[in-house]
Image (cartoon, rainbow over all chains, first blue to last red; front, side):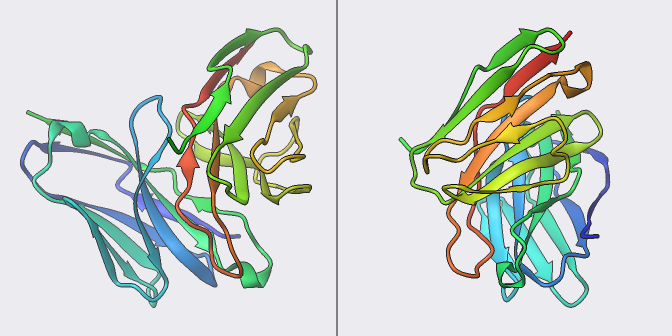
Length: 115
Length: 116
């Protein structure tokens, strides 16, 4: 069964510090991997989307990396701000040439940035 | 403005009373999907649709129905709601062409459902 595992489950950091969130997946073959940010009670918002051939993608202070060989991705947040406090969700999209269109979601990492 | 809308945003109902949550997108997206989110369980996919009249089950389809008669709309139907369907529901849409894995999903604002 396809799975996406995220770590840590939760993380507390001081404002201004950097942090890295991890995502391991078993989906194969896959087409792309996405990172979303979700504020409490609101719909997720896309941060990055990477195809299997990309190694890194940035969106402002957010940088995602992908190692398709080890099936690992990370999301690095630079110079954290209080507004970064949210859940970060890793999502893997299958290669639909294999007949599957179902996305696989991780449970998310809850990040708290404190002053 | 490109958006996904859901209605209602909040709903309190009683066990067994049929309800429909509407979802509409204005981006001409092929792929639409419904999710529920419960504490500690993350987002779980209920149903998805690749295009008009094409739907398929996600991870937790029991107790739900969907239809896709028009490209822009994808309603979620609970024919006989039960308390275990109390949850936060999200609709989402994205483009999906060829054998690619789909594009960025745009999520609606969510519908908080309570079944008594």
